Image (cartoon, rainbow, N blue to C red; front, side, top):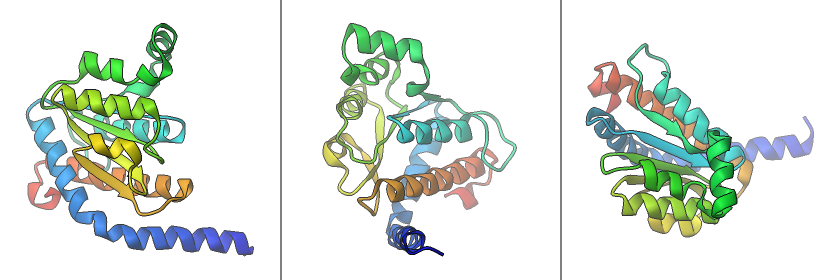
Length: 194
């Protein structure tokens, strides 16, 4: 194996090992999601670039299913509608593309989850701020210290790395753990889920 590949694998393993400290937080966020779905709440996700793909992945696991055959749950990814995104970006600014959607859709009882590697993108920060103002619960899937977005996160799930690939790899792990918790809860297996 080439040296750089070995370095990448070692960095991935180190991030995963450090991530063990986040397991209690994942259980809390899993409970938050289950309580929101139990009361008819919706999960709204978003991100930029690869983080948009992670947001869409999470929505797919929630509205579809992860491992168990269960009822669909309400989830929407705000970065998947090019007409709305380009309308808002053109008429307002790119910084508003998620915040305007959150203002129009999110309500108390909903969960708004942002995926970002840096936590510095203005459109992420403003959307989390708008979600808190709307009374929704905010979850940040970030990295490092979470950047400015962390100020508006009720729950900050921060990958223990400053490297974009490692952050995104751990985001996938976290969204899978949460999907497993939600699946178990929706299937009536609350002891397993929580």
